[in-house]
Image 1 (cartoon, rainbow, N blue to C red):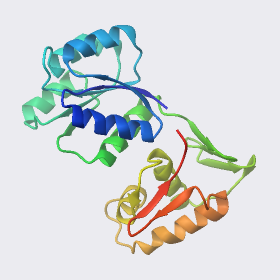
Image 2 (cartoon, rainbow, N blue to C red; image 1 turned 60 degrees about the horizontal axis):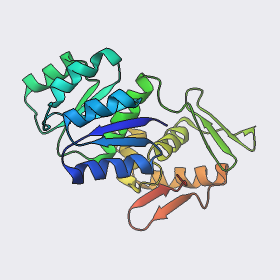
Image 3 (cartoon, one colour; image 1 turned 90 degrees about the horizontal axis):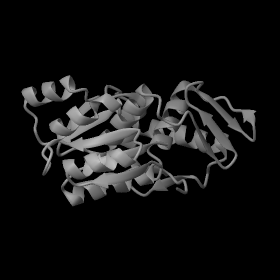
Image 4 (cartoon, one colour; image 1 turned 135 degrees about the vertical axis):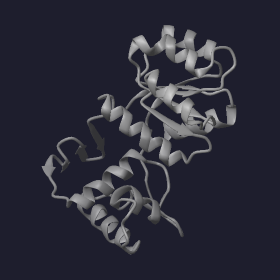
Length: 219
């Protein structure tokens, strides 16, 4: 997975972000001001920066001017939602711009998109005897290929990218089937049963009572 630098001066938000980054397998470093972040980035390599705009010391835009030559992808996270601020962020080289307050699952999804675009996302995932190769859309169990339908693979990828996080059936439909899917949430249960059976993950894909499912993986 990736090493992500979180630059956020509000500790509760910083803690929420880093807790969920750890859950899905990323490593992280924290900075609470632009000045602290600039010093941190002098001594650490980063695959991605999550950057608040309104910071003490250097603000996010000023910090971006300093780090843009390093070509580290940046997602701006800010309460500043004016069009002029978003345009400035993108002109400075931001890969994405997310407005506070935000859903943590949306942030994780955007992180995955940026990491894949910059080739920093893990190309494969291994757990127990299961190996999943994302680019090739291949799955092996005990080194033997396992055939998944397109929808089963997409659901599996959502579970892996959000591992250790409880996902509702509605959220799984949204992430794996798409925003405009009009089907019944029971279709999620059918596909989960198939994934458990094909992968031998009866104990890995946990049912979350009255909510949905969680892929449990030790990090």
